[in-house]
Image 1 (tube, rainbow, N blue to C red):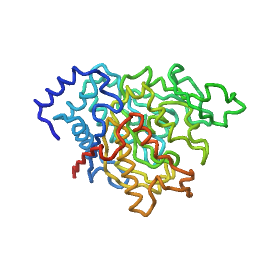
Image 2 (image 1 turned 90 degrees about the horizontal axis):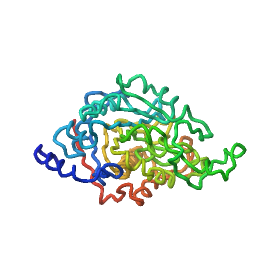
Image 3 (image 1 turned 30 degrees about the horizontal axis):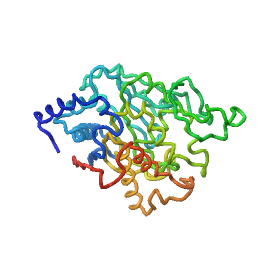
Length: 363
């Protein structure tokens, strides 16, 4: 549905009387997913900037119902906001966040009146951020932040995390034995990055479309759960001790995450249907040529999961939920049920009959 400007302004005036909590997870559009496809969005392995820009502009307007991109960005962001953008570098060099997707998002924020210095691009690990080259293509004036220096087995560093905001769960990494008492509450907690608790008041979750050996898929929900807190490897400490199905929803259900994440954009220009999340994805890439938009991360992840399963079927592989270990995916079971569990606790819509996917083909 496209609104004319008079209808949009009337709706905007009405929504201005609504409580600010309308934004967040699952947001003002539960169950709504916009899928924008463009055949020209990738050539070889190279994203094409102009088609991708058109995809971003069309997606944000279709999601919000606004008459123009600038109006659409203003549905979510206003002058004075400090906006974080969560990237994903884990699948480098094959499948990571792309500058061609980030740049039009930053341009849209500026159309909404957000100053360049109030845009903060983030990933959890400084070393991965740099190794992915994200710092090299940030526009001048935009800031970037991280929470930890680099990946390590013991993930209880606290310098970049807020000691007052955490999720405590009865999951412990046995590798901590000898360094910490396993009864110490610290080993049972995941603390939220100060980037989110103190530095920004809104966040865009910019995730990528790929398989994950433990969680089944790593889309919107997992980009939040494993990117915004520490002590995450306790959720999948071995090929058999896998608790991602419950860990992911529990983390995303933290109030600070639910309240500040106002927009989810899933970059599916290129996807990985197996071998995730890291380097093995190079054998399993496909040009999906689609970017997805939602305020509801559950509906978005259900849609992305189905897209990956369709690609798996095309190449003769079983659905992710039935996947058993092989050379490039060694976990016993992929716990893609984290998406359904997230729906059960109110993080969004899981039921296909209640999910509305608006598909737009630009070329």
